[in-house]
Length: 309
Image (cartoon, rainbow, N blue to C red; front, side, top):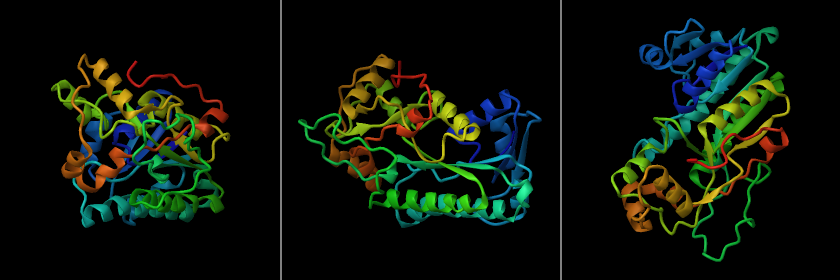
C-alpha cells in the first residue's frame, strides 16, 4: 500500500508511519520542514518527503495521485500555547483548510489514481462538555457513542467543520473514516508528558473536582485502530478512538502517579487551572464520556485495558 500523509511527524503520525513501513508499505509525507521530518522519521527509502505546507494549495497536491490511501493528521497542537483569537484561528485553519486542500488534491487526481480511503483525524471534543459532574452521578448514564450530536463550544465547531471537509471525499468514491481521538497515553513525547512531569516533581493530582471523565487510549491501540481503518471496509464514518475502560479524572491521576512511583496528592483547583491556561481550562475541567462503539462493532481487540498497566 502507498499512503499519503499530512501531519506525519506528530505523535500518532510518527508511530503509524513506523508501523506501516515495518509491514512493507511505502509513504509520501508532506511537511513544512523536510529536514526535520527526515530526522524525525528516519532514512528509510520507503518514506518520501515533500516539503510544502498542506494548509495552502501547491504542487504537493499532485503527489496524492497514485496513492492507495490518505491519512490526514495535520493540525496545530491544542495545548501548545495559551489561546487568544489568533491561536484559535490557527487551531481551526490548520485543520479545516488542510483537509479542504487534501480533498481538492484527491478530486484533481484521475479516478483510477485516487486513494480509495481517507482516514482523517478528529477529536472527542466533537461532543458536548460534561461540566461539574456531581459525586452522585451514575457511571454509565452519560455514555457518548458516535451517533451523538456535536456540541456547541469552540472545539466542537472546529471538529464538525474538520469532519465536513473530510466527508467531501465521499462523493469521489472514497471510504472516509473520522477518528475522534481521546487522551492518548503511552510512549514518549505525547500529550501526557506535561502532566507526568508534575507527578515526577511530586506536584501531581486530579484536575478540578476529579469527577470528569477521561476517555483515553494507549498509543499502541491508536495505531492498531488506524491500521484497521486503512485496511478494513468495516470502518467508515466517525470512530471514537478511545478505550472501553474510561476513568474519572481522579482515578486516572491516581493510576498515573502510581505508574511513576509518585502520589496523586496535589489537586489543581478549577480557579487555578483557569488562571494558568485560559480558554483551554474548560476542556481540562469537563469530561467527554466517549465509548468506542464503532471499533467494538468492527471487531477490534484492545491490547491495553489500563492506561498505565
